[in-house]
Image (cartoon, rainbow, N blue to C red; front, side, top):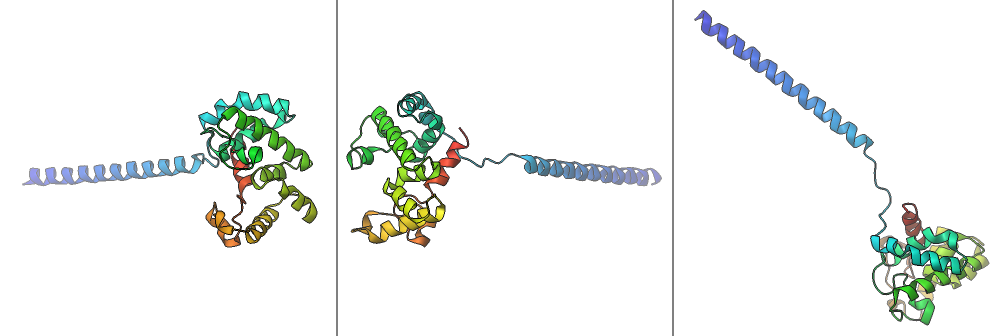
Length: 205
């Protein structure tokens, strides 16, 4: 009986030690995981597509031709926002070229026109880069509006312009809010957060 009790005692002690070791292991594993999570870098900006990167040499060529060679990263970011580099009109520059969507069928012409149009918005905006970028989306009439109202680009002036254009449109139904957050302002003309999106892409180039 004494031997049996001794064996039972040893068995209980063994189980206790094993239980404690398992608890320690789980605790260490949890703390290690928490530490990894704490220092894991967050992706705060989106990635640039390979299609956009492949167009960089062509963008550089026309940027040099039109005197905006210092803005190649901006132009790549704009292409990313416009199309991700996909399709025959990756800069979505048909409207500035012919006045309607879809008339450009050649990516090189799209890039040439897009770079040219950006160079004009930048010059008209007196090198206010954010104003030039937003005007690529809104049209160059936005530059005149800003110069008459505040003189410089701001998020508020972009919202005000979009709202006014939407309210005064002869047929507002042709516009749809590109973003849910724009609906609260009834600012459905163009993309009121175009600058913000472009600059996010620019930050990862």
